[in-house]
Length: 546
Image (cartoon, rainbow, N blue to C red; front, top):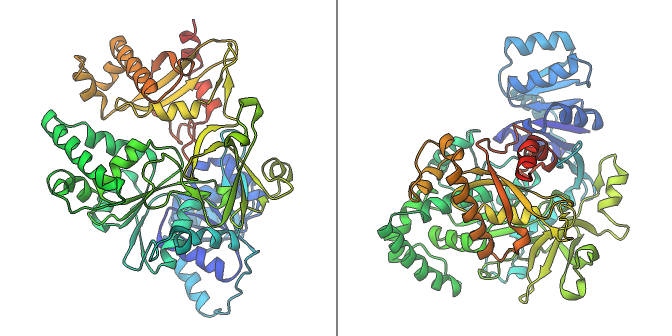
């Protein structure tokens, strides 16, 4: 039986999931940013008859769909107290309503469990691509246990103890609807550690962090880059001290020593450590690239093990993970204990496995069963020998770790025949302190690139004043001199990171509207929706090419 969960991260989410595990039921998460069409698609494709919601707003959303004849729900379970609007919709739809407390009482009288086998389905996790309806990734209990072992296998990491222990505390704020956060929680519970849930508002996250003081903290790259910019952009004297402190602690890092007890921690880094609760021990990042310079800075500033992972929902989150002590390679680590990795030729981009470069393909106990009710898409991704084709291009480094260098599909060709991997270039450009987001565009009939740039609202004023430009955020974004300065900085950052001349934009357009899930310019996993971005900025792109 499939059970839908449409809820913010909270303890009842995990209780529902564990209850489903105990009775061999399949969890199907829903989340706000999917949008009404995708929710309708999931509800009908999975034929969801029972859904658990956290509040009346989500109850209203689902009951409205039932009332409009989009899908059918038999039982709705709500964590809050139903309000008048919910009760009125219930009468119109004949949906049975139970509160979460009532379900717990019913459960006390039905304690006989039906535990699953490893091959049984645990969840259908819908991933939204940049186009079309989301695909339902089928993951088994065996898949989840396979990747849980990453934090539990000492032999693979040559560690004397587990990575986590029962004194650790994890803050859960990344969506539980995504498999990454669920894997982290499973690892935490297996270690006997604790999970604290944020209030539900990302703007209040740092207050939650200060109150909970977590030891385990998954961080998205954007948050890491922002912290780096804030700490790194200090006054001359503070910057001098900071450079000395970083240099000293980097020498320790090269020897595999991570500490918070140096004189530099007391003089320079204690404030930023206390911002993160002061007890940080293991920080995890993934989803998008973070520069080695920024990662190592965060390692020395926070005095924590900063692990970078690479993966996909189809591989139950993790494919490779950096191991303690590997702080110099700029890689995404070594293959996880649950899978093997091979590189396959991508001749159209001149990547060949014999040269240690190619498309990353994965096989193992963490690889998904297939896409629910979509055999065609499954065959495109999972070959007949069980290899998952990720669409990412990687290379093996001399120490045996993997580095992601390109995308196989998100590429385009310029008029002179050069291939462009926009996501790689965009990631480099966001290292400019004045820049929050970048959308790079090129066309096969054009010889150069152009870019839409969203300046960082917090950093722009300070950055510009240091270059003799003043004004409000809106005024600065409309200032031609500021546009010229930002383009020059992007070019400088790009050249420093080894970009070729044809990978640098000829012109840029400054916009003040952040790309977001709400305006449909980002997917719920914060990847750019390139077709939508092009449509949104089509006029500006055409003007840049004139």
